Length: 365
Ligand SMILES: *Cc1c(COP(=O)(O)O)cnc(C)c1O
Image (cartoon, rainbow, N blue to C red; front, top):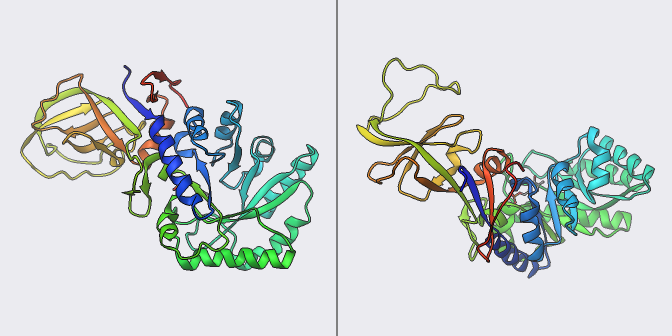
């Protein structure tokens, strides 16, 4: 079997999706499964579709196009505000897009009308995380203009938290989103189909809130893929955190000092590394590097320590483990390592499902 590879247990992902849709559905919240962490893999999306997911979100039009062309019958939401240069493809491939810029919405409207289409949009509201979003005080005039445009249908509001600034979803900001939606609905006599309260980081808010207000939608990626609450990275009860297994191969194994010697200057990435002297250790080099993973976001399933990674080499302290050259080492992946492994054409994607039949995906995604 090829290495490095990422083994993807589709049944575990389907299980996670089923549990989360049931949990959120218990209070009337619909889930869009976010596929950007897996490059919009049609194999994964198809497993999620079989588990009851009916809506997919991705930040890249190319991923949405790929899923659509794979014949997946679902709603597709572009979850990153469109580039002006891609509006034509957005209208062609996405049913809905999240938006914050009036100039972009006007372009979407123009292309949609030209093709006799109605493109649906959700306006994103800034509530403190300081990534995308319209400031609450500026939403109303935008809604007024959007409602007058041909080719566009405003179907809702949304917000995104805990991504850039670390501002978490709270009772206060969720109620604020509901209140903004309520005001606009009354003022314009409309009913929003979607009030999208956030992402995987909304878990604690959801389980503790006495009242979800008007929020009826979440966009969930990491909790489905890695089974965790992204505010703490702790496992959500009953979910699998090990649906992905990264496997890499040992290409050098030697007892060497733990501290570099000679005159120390910058490493390959412009930093001057500092290592503790722990005497001699058994050091393994694996054929895997920063081009494939984020070395700080992988965890060996054996009792080894990750010492660091260069572009193509991962260095582990494997003292006392009795490994050999050619041995395969398994790792759990965090989100940034998953992203990179799925994106790297050098990491083989291996899809596993209940039948234990292995199907090898194409090596690029
Ligand atoms: C990535 C993203 C999500 C999903 O985030 P997770 O933490 O993976 O659940 C939801 N909404 C937007 C706008 C995103 O960019």
